[in-house]
Length: 355
Ligand code: DNO
Image (cartoon, rainbow, N blue to C red):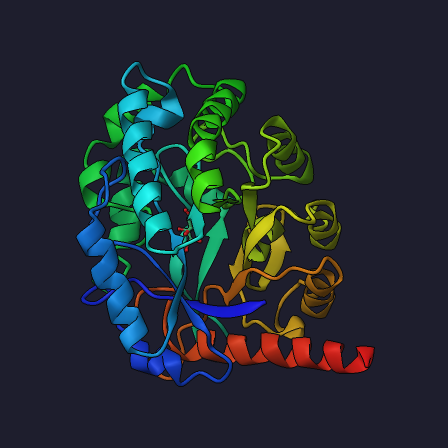
């Protein structure tokens, strides 16, 4: 496994590369060109600049999270091929720059969704939380404002203001898109990009839908073992793989994460390690990474990754906001660094026992 840390790029992140480098065991970052819009072709110069900056800090670019997918591709509109071609061109340039993992998602309109970005826990830390009853009270057109006004002044990933200014039109675009159509559009997209992925050995890693059910009536198709296996089998190319996000999968307690890790052996290209605490169906909050703070068996999860011989990048996912840090919700330095140390401690302990 390669330990990594999500970094949004200079000017977009409160955490510096120098701080990331000082986290013991850290090999590299997972980053993006945060200024780009979904559907836009990335420039080689900008990719090179980002890579040079990261490498000058003594770290590697272990992958991109995300190259976002334009809604035309998800909806399957007549102009989708133009945006797919832009995506292929971007992959070509990433491949030329020796970048071999791209995380993306195929969630309509909204990326991950939460009802609270700063729920106060008994110890005074704050976390992202979800309560379906709260979401049901929100007009989808107001959802962007709800997220944006609570994000400490940061643009949250997947919640681009320019795109979500047109949320009404976006919902309109998806009105005839059901789960099957969305799935077929995903397969069409993947088949189109596989040749460039083969050429440069780029692993595509689709992110789990978060939460794992339909929100605001929009279809969601990457939310269970069955969905994941269907996708993997529909495009049987090793470059078509997944981002195993423990936190997102755990939103639905029916998902047996350890079994899913075993079932997806060879096709997990990236892992997000995070713990959540379940209150009731449709009600959960994010927790510190260690097992006893949440509902997940984090030791069993790390063991499963060892068992399948996972050797890709993994990273601590959302952390709590602690020690007065002001950062993008979920993406402060302190608790993710603690999470990283916990994951590595578990890993080292399990490996030691194997000797
Ligand atoms: C949220 C993230 C997601 C993820 C995308 C991948 O914090 O896990 O925004 O990066 O869904 O495209």
